[in-house]
Image (cartoon, rainbow, N blue to C red; front, top):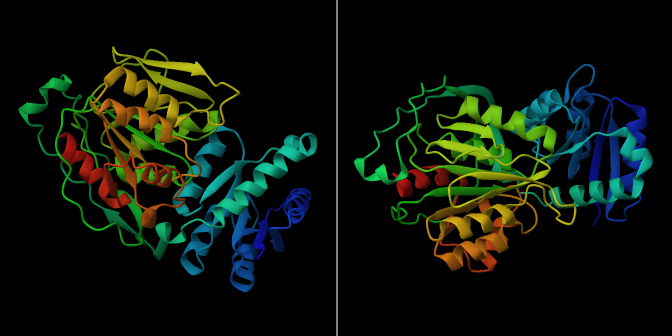
Length: 381
């Protein structure tokens, strides 16, 4: 059965072109269009599409507000179109936080100059997110509630092998989050064994921005291990994403730069369009993105360098995402004696990357999203 799509955009040209591209695929059926957020909500309720494509800047009601209403009234996978600017990145991250599944850059020139590439990418996204796990990010109440930030526990003396603790940092203001329901996590597992990990490496793709936020906001400011984050994301977006995480988290988060040094309580986010590697001295190397590689940044590249530099002292976590990036890097880490965790299927938006880890028998533990941050603290502190 064809995937039913609702196309929402205030530009008549863009609506027509997106509709034409999608309708050319026999597996996709455009069931309707809308010119603003209010129409989008009405059409979503009436047509019950499998996927909605959504612009964010529209009259009467913007795309983010529309996504929030749709998630509350008829949860549907939403693909956002965004501009490749810092402001576009900020708005897109807000849309993902509101419940959108994924995004694509909105580039009119690409649509006119390279239609085949655009068609392939757009149709692949639509078909993939039509199978996304909406249960993993379904909001049940529109009223924001304050989530208090707990006071971090003191770091035991036994963690001194990581070096001096991170500088003190005041806890951020309470985070506003919508009440949400998630599918049940995997059966409760024993707490992970503590170990003097020298690095925590987290890789993710579709659904990752929200997943990373949920994991990292559970870590105390004195988290004793350095972290590296690999999120599939365009170059224009990673700086804004790092800044967003830094404001929400008690650990520090920044976009990685060549020469950065791994430090306890600091998370370095791989810059979009490039590759991040780690050497044995704890220094970060940022390399140009190789066009032969599908992912820039690639989880495999960073995991592989971590295996070479840190052997059995790495704790790697693979979160929600399409494809299998991270599997081969995890294999190298496993061969070196490091630990690999995977997010469970029930809490993933897209159970692709974690599934690849599990099917390859590389996972030492499988945890629900809400438990991963807690278990990282238990394993490292």
